[in-house]
Image (cartoon, rainbow, N blue to C red; front, side, top):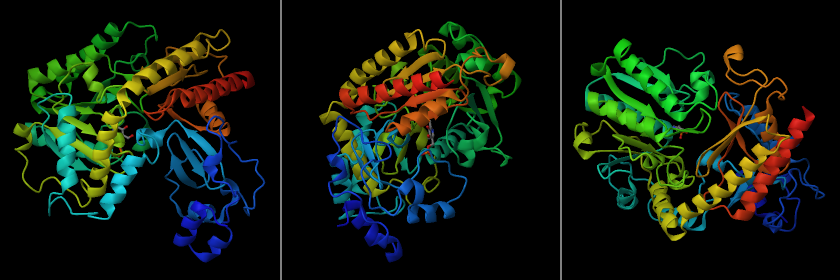
Length: 499
Ligand SMILES: Cc1ncc(COP(=O)(O)O)c(C=O)c1O
């Protein structure tokens, strides 16, 4: 008998492949006990010709025809997601501490969100934003308006991806101010399209070999000790003063305020190492922007929608964004991004200057309405705060363990956007790196993440430093969070022991 995912595969793929893809297990995969993770590689005797990871014909076929430009941390075909877990075709089940990089924040296939999308599919799938306004678009604005971090944010535009939303924000800033230059943070990640890539300064891999990038982009160091090459124990106020000083210098030496359209910043640096921006820094940026009529663009693509325990991370600082960018968790997996600004400003845009074939898709908007409802009904923000305390307690205990202390530099983040930074034997910037620990194993973060995968949990690294990031579902249970932490702890100990 074909299992559920086998049937799906059989319907949609060729019969030659179908013949080799009979499911190994008679019992449903979710029969795996909820308190123990199935082994990363199933030990159940299998009737598969080969496991998906090692020899599934469809997987191997696809891999041969997918661009090498994509990287991937797991092998095999992911076939199902349910809450905090994902399942691969060969029976491997993983606890998912990535949420598809901060997207399926209410867990995979949240029943109300999936049902809302399915229902919408039976009514209207696409209307195109330049042809007609659809109901879920209007309903979504109704839901989001009261959740905005400042009441002045009252004019919405929905697009598909975070990068597109960043592009829109840059375009708006230029139109609103009639100026060109954009200031970004060293360590920032804003996406891979041309404008977004130009303001991305977290890793060279995103733009290597594709210059020239969009001109008129300048950067200052984020108030993070690595970026300023100072000790991790440096007082936050010193980091803030240094970064604001660099900004003032930049405005005096490189980009005159009269030429500067916007400053763009993530309130929690994501790809730069999961570093929350100190509220004083954000307030300082606001002051400088007010003084020179520069737009402050707050990119909450990753930190937004409850990830840090508030709807938007910028709320911790009380700072008013001129333009707010969001995506990822907004629709729990359906492609949707949003750009919000003041009506007084967006009224300057020519009708037709914004838009896109799939912008603000009906099904995605319907899913996003259900996400907003679920936040309310299921007390998601409270869960984030409670689980956040637990994860920090666990990781800080790990950090203070005398056998690990020399190797764990930092535990940081906000809400359930949390990172552990390990020491590095050489560091980036080598001799100038403020912290190198020669006894530390090489590539410790990626080795720890790999071990976690072997033990049944998917987790990601981030930044050019040795950082592992935790992005569990916002509605994760204490039990699953503890399970993930224990897997991480075991992985760290093993990597350190192996040296
Ligand atoms: C802060 C931030 N901005 C923008 C983006 C780009 O979003 P997308 O990958 O949807 O284009 C990301 C993606 O990770 C992000 O984290």
